[in-house]
Length: 304
Image 1 (tube, rainbow, N blue to C red):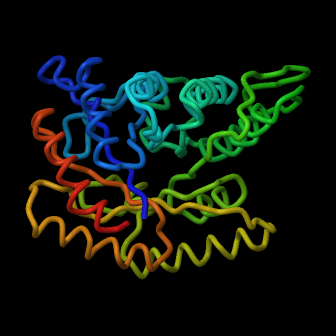
Image 2: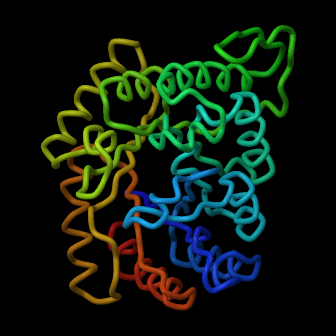
């Protein structure tokens, strides 16, 4: 089991506590010292004001710019976008940003992507909410083409690339993990993905996420089996990651919390999960770093 931890650069108060270069450097060093494999950030260029005030709301830095700073402050920590919403951007801009971070970090990017769910955010960004699935599929095809090197000729709903040559062309390219739990998301992951990153359905989510979320460990097993069937039908045999952590958010550095986390990753690993996503409280940078070091000693070390 590998671990990807939330990197809390989305926290704006107090100023500089998390959103500053000294903070990023200190947190990145702590993650590396603790043996954490990757850190993740999310993507919301223009989020819904009401959502920001709700339980699931949070700020978000630009994921590529934010992870570039993390890359500069670390040497081996993998850099995970969890997730980039593909319909928000031209796919060649996304391919360029991702390839730049990947190349300059020494091949450390994991590009987690999804279709998005906030209608008002789509409207603010000039993207068609109702065509977000099609736009995502077109973006994945264009990004894969952009990373192959050489000339590219491909068209989509909002782009027409003829005789262009995107660079850099990273070799190997970043792995792409596809988010979502719908039937179409499984199809997308099987066709385009190097991994799948579902999420749990939870009270308070909007209906889109409730319907697409994982309901139980049994549901997760069923979805993984369906995904593997789809990959086999496409002749896909390359290694494939599945990223999903326990439902718990770590709040205390104690033996009970460590044991609960270890107990919960066991069934996930048996179901086929290879990466655990981890959330921790972060009332202050010092408390976050303390939890990171504790997690490395009491959870990571005991799984290896």
